[in-house]
Image (cartoon, rainbow, N blue to C red; front, side):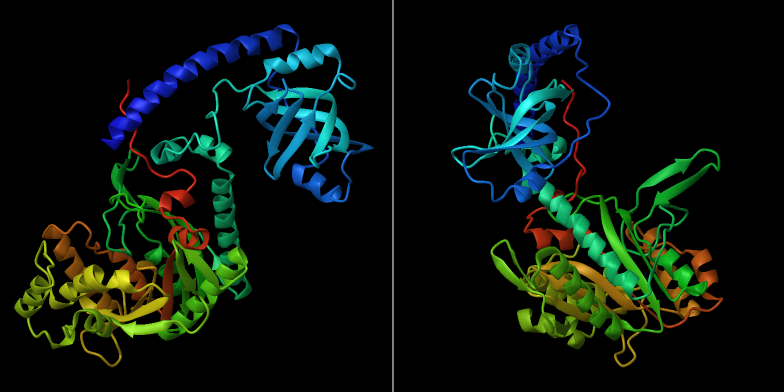
Length: 504
């Protein structure tokens, strides 16, 4: 129903847009007939809107200077038959004052060939109006781009969420807070790089197209290389190639890049997303948790100026110490079930059934325990929490726990009931690694298309020797969601994946 409504709205908007477009084309042709190029090559401005506001913040009302400035931006409002024009650049708004005392009559009339959405460049002097509005008294202006399609009629007129994501460029014009979210995303990535670079990490790039898509439990996208006549997969993780670099002699490496998983779309999932993965030789998951805590705190402070954020009405405190709890204890606290006391698959399935959990396929005790956690416990972990010590069955790339049989040294970071990071004491034994990936390959043959493939080249690389290593992957998009109070992952991705509307 929502999709039908969106389609109907699009049809209506297109009909309305066509009418406006015809009128704007007429104005475009009039500008050209007057010898004006409505799409010039450049404009040399001298200041942005915010720079002028900062420079003239102490200018009294009803005062005018003789300072000449050149400003430019997009027209988003006009009043009094183009006497007052609100122009927006990336920094904010500046008002243009167009008056017959400083503009020729022909230029004043030509203003009526402009529309909201057009770009304009203006030269003039600085004045502050009686009401306190900093303005540029225009002495000349240039059309910098004639827009052919109309913007929504008001700031509140572009509220359809699907339409906003689909026409992101319009969303960014009309809703400046969305631009601010993308700027904060950039700031978060910059802070993350700074943190890692300052600690001696090398940023690297690994293949997006891979012969085997490993490093995570996920369904990959597949494509075909014509010249080589082979299928290739878009990466679902950067892990295995980064570990190859550790084997090759690098001791601290990281990559921030796009990851592609052929999965569903939700407020927490987009088929392509950004992840930071890092690996450091000679450390384990205990050190990695401490490192992660400091890293996320650094990014949070850089973006928000604080270690606290308010996300969807919940205050999240990033200050140390963060809670560490085993999967077993977390499940026990919420459900009363001790998963380590479950001695068989039948017992585990019965315990899950009592919780109302339906298991779709055959599963081990460890896999069932993980499902219990995901369905009954995960949503309760609001403050930063490291969930530690996972079942070995669901962690094929992780070192076995040095003290607890059947478990591995793995953690996941949860905040606001969502997974944000995944870290290990990385498995470095090539014989053990081969056994575990062969088990994953059997699961793939049995129909589990998210099980990991047997990457024989990676096994061969490990046989040259891999040092003790700690590693982590952090979802950039979900972290930025928290730091910008964004309810959907689409809010923090410039161009989220959308299903095309049916052609009319």
